[in-house]
Image 1 (cartoon, rainbow, N blue to C red):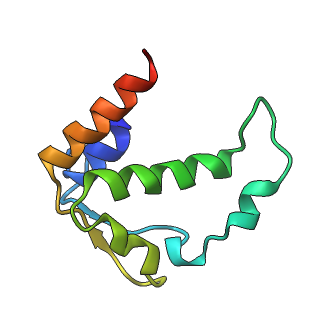
Image 2 (cartoon, rainbow, N blue to C red):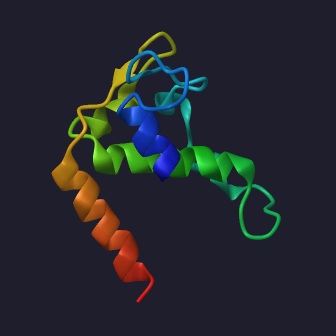
Length: 95
């Protein structure tokens, strides 16, 4: 989650802005892709889906990523309120 939050706010080393371009546009993802054989409970592809879900939760405009085309770029409208709500959700899962 920390990586996505840093990317969404433009704070990764060498990152010049908070504009993100996805190697695989989220609009091309399918749920069937998550049904493959898993090692230790997950596959690397699962991580990408999780990263997109994190962006969806912490950005005011997160829902727009799922309609992006290959040439689209995404600029997160970071929401401290949404980030805090997501953090609280995750912390509650550990209780």
